[in-house]
Structure formats: C-alpha cells, structure tokens
Image (cartoon, rainbow, N blue to C red; front, side):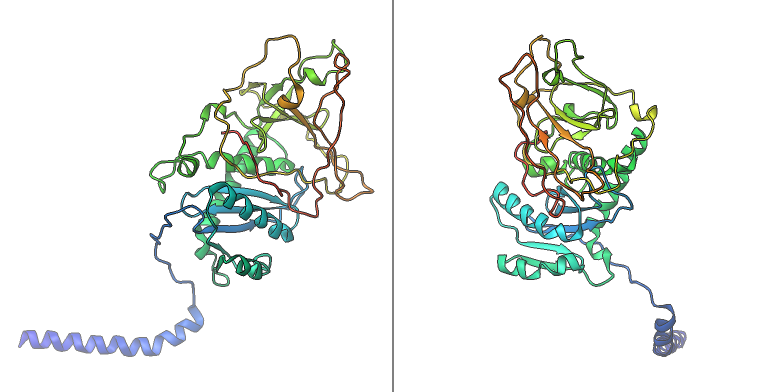
Length: 379
C-alpha cells in the first residue's frame, strides 16, 4: 500500500510539472529570455589548415604609428598558431586574407579547407571568393560570438598582453601595433595545455623556438649605427627603444625618440633594466593625418644558422644592407593623406663613397598593411 501511494504521488507530481511547463514556459520565455549555455567542444582537426578562425579587431580610438586602426587575426585550429595582419580599413580584409591563403598554402604544401568567422560585412563579401576556391565558409549565428570562441579568446589574450607591454614600458598608445605584434610573437612561442604543453610554433614547425633571441619590450637598446655615420667622429650608436622583432629580418626594431626613426638591426646591445619612456616626455606626431602603414608580415620558419646577437669588435663597418635597415616612422604632412615614405636601405658614409642611397616606397594605406608573406623571421 505504501509503495502504491508513493507511485501515485510521483505520477501526480510529474503531471503537475508537465502542466506547469506548458503554462509557464511561454510566459517566461517572453519576459526572461536569455542565452543558453553551450557544451564544451572536444572536436579537433588533424591537419594544418583544415580549419582557420578569422576575426577583425577594432577600430582603435587613435591611430597607431603605422596608421592602422584594425588588425586581422587568423588562428589555425589544429596548432593554435596565429597570424597577425594590421589593417588601415576594414575593407582591407579581402587583401589580407588573399595573401594569407596564398602564403599558407605555399609554405605548408596543403590547401586551406574551411574558414570560420562571424557574419560581418567584411566577411560576407568574401562568400563568392571562397566558393571559387572551394573553401567552406563557416559562419557563427548572428549575435552569437561564443560560437567563435577560439578567436575571441585569442583577441583578448593578444590585446591584454599588448596593453601590459605598453604599461610596463610606458610607451604611448600609438605604439600599440608593435605591442600587439610582439604579443602574437610571444604567445606563439608559449607552451599550451591544448597542444600537450607544446608551443604553437613547435606544433606547427616541429622545432623548438629560440628563447635566447627574446628581449624585454620597451627597454633601452643601442643598435650598431656606424655605417650610417657621416664622418668618423660620429658616435657609433645612439640610445633607442626596443619595440619588437622584425617580421622580414632576423633582427630587432629599435626606435630613436630624437629622430623618430625606426632602425632594424642585428647587432644590438640591450639594457633590459632601463625603460627610456619612463623618463622621456610623451612623443607626439608632427601632424594629425594618417601616416603610412608599415608592412607587417606573418611568421614563417626561422633561419637556424644565426646565433644570438653579439656586438661587433672590428673598427671597420660591416656590409650595411645585410645588417641594419632604417625605416622612417615620421607621419606625413598635413596637406597629404597617408602618402608613401621612403625606406632607406643603405647607409651613407663619407668613408665609403661607392655606396649610394636609394629609396623604395612603403605600401599605400588604401591597401592592407601586409601584402607579402614573410620569408625569414626570427625564431
């Protein structure tokens, strides 16, 4: 008798629960609708470029030193390796993705199979382009960024790491693109639980990164500038600020606060305990127009034959084009909008009259900030 009463009670409660849901759910859904929790996904592709997540960050409230307000981030789902493309406009996504597809398919000898992004206008216009290439364009539901969670978390990681680098070095906000690019460089070389405590770099290229090449962002540095001297009594170097790693050289970027020039050098001495911008006044651009966007390219396998940096002891300058490159980072005049600036690829010296100086143009800001793949980045 007791068992029958218990069974009857369960039946009554069950029927009451059904009736309650029938009456309550429509009313509660109208007034208390909210997002549902999503289960964790254990899906993992087995090959590089089987699936790549893409997303655009921006716009930033101010221009960076290279004239960009956005950046495109591409993450390989298998290795979690990231590629970073600074953008002047959102419309530059097409140019950046086109170059990313060409570069990645050539370097890894495989075809890109699918791309996942949100349903934004800059990606919506690429549907026909992806269809022609046979690439599946997977899109998250409208207003459901959690379906693109991998790239969203990567955005947060990159931005927070970049802002931390700026805070430590006291560099102004216009250096954020260099800080974000350095953050991507470091994150690609950090061990990850997702990759069995291997770094994305090691997972992708099957080699361990060279951590001895790393330096403290924003610290004082002294690049070897003797080939740039106009006479023999000029100083061999000048105090600069380390602002990251060159993506197209095996060298360091060194910013001279006095001349507003960016030197790319291999022979650099670092004072990693001193940050010049802690003591320098804020650096302001000479005009309010958009400066040209310096090309920044994605990472590819390093040159293993290069050893950690050492300062030269010889009194004669080495071959300048292979060692040091100077990039003008000054913004354009107020009468022009994002005109090209020359890149001085050979230094001038009175002791070497046979070395002439020539110029090549930086890409226009109407296109993506990176239109060519990197060929020999630092490890």
